[in-house]
Structures are given as structure tokens and as C-alpha cells.
Image (cartoon, rainbow, N blue to C red; front, top):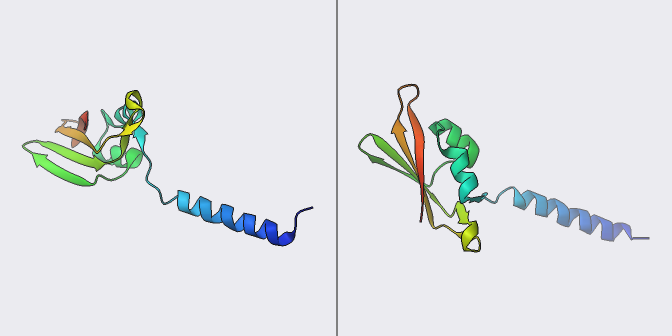
Amino acid sequence: MKSPLRLAWLAAILLIGSLLSGCIDSTFSRGLFEGYVVGQTQEQVIDKVGKPTSEEKSGDAMKWVYKKKTFDPDSMNAVDAITTIVFQPDPATKKLAVSVQFS
């Protein structure tokens, strides 16, 4: 039989661990990330993968930059330093994600 004090410590450790895990940003495989964002609006992208680290405007295009958000399963899960989503104007919506660049 386990002591009540030991069970209380175990419960506290599990609670702290679960709270901390909610504070960690998610990372995505390249394929999953690309599947989530290509063809989506900016609002849909935020819902799926979160807000970008920074934004860059280039003519009609908008680029969203994420840092350490994706990994490459073909390179032993090496984390990409930068992932860029390119948005282009779309007649039906404001802008749609048309491509993703990994570096």
C-alpha cells in the first residue's frame, strides 16, 4: 500500500507537468504543416498553426514567418530555423496561402 504523502507528491508532479506542457508551442512535420495551410485564409492558418513570428509585405503578396515551427522527417527530424508562408490575393477572399518555404 502506498502512503498518502507519496500519492499527493505524485499527483502534484503530474499536475505541474500537464500545466507546463500546455505552455509549449507545437511543432509540425513539413508535410502536415503544408497540408494545414496551403489554400487557407489567414484566419484559418492562425487557427491551425498559430500566429506568425513576423510578417513581410512584398507587392501584393504577404509572407508570414515562423521560427522553429516545423521539422523535416527526412533529415532525422531536424527542426527548420524558418518556415515562410506566402499569401496571394484571391478574388473570393482577402488572401490565400499559396506556398510554404522551409529553411
